[in-house]
Length: 131
Image (cartoon, rainbow, N blue to C red; front, side, top):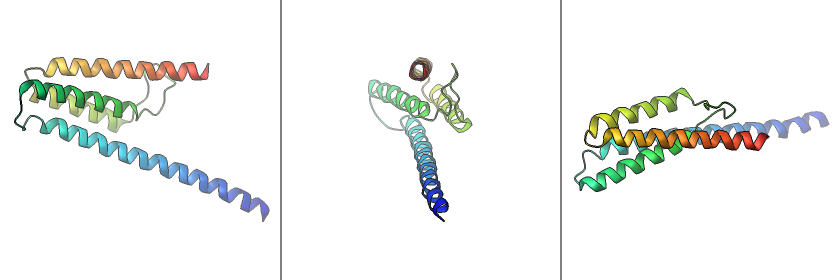
């Protein structure tokens, strides 16, 4: 009886931790979807071109940060991302290159470089932390 009582709280803690992680992933995926919708909506809004450019760059930077937060394994030089995150990143690429012809390629190059830097930094932190 004592052994059972001892195991039950650990199992509950594990289950709560797992539920928390799943809830975090769900919220993060929802935020990524909202950011992509926002990115697509910027083209339809009336605004000065410079403001639109700044908002697109900012949106891509936030999106890259959110996608970096979905990394499932930092132990590789090329961190492992869930397929859904890669698909969302590709969707953002399609939107930027198709909808923002005047600055889309430059914006996407910026976003790719930013993502690469963030992933490299995350891997370096992981490596430094376990060394």
